[in-house]
Every structure is written in C-alpha cells, then in structure tokens.
Image (tube, rainbow, N blue to C red; front, side):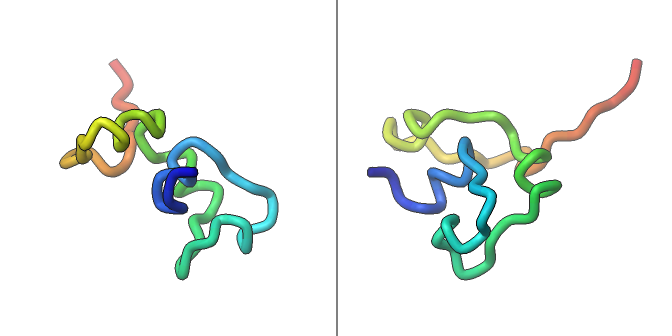
Length: 58
C-alpha cells in the first residue's frame, strides 16, 4: 500500500482521521492539488511545481 502522503493525492476520505496524516488536508486543499496517480510516485518522480492547481480564464 502506498504511504499516506501518496494516497491523499488521489483519495479523500470523509473522515479526516483516515488520511493518516499529522495535518489532514481540507477538502478545498485536496481539490486544488494537481491530479496525479500513485504510480507517479512509484516511478520515483517528484512534483516540483505547481503544488496547487489554478484556473486562468481565457
């Protein structure tokens, strides 16, 4: 099973305790993260930028 820091990239449990993080993410923070799969980390890659998704209207 992937570490908690990786699981919270693609899964958001209703109960914050199940994030198994010392500082659980809020729903808004979860939704603003870039969309990635756990395989990204399994392949040894690391996200440098952006840590948050932002919408720029045309």
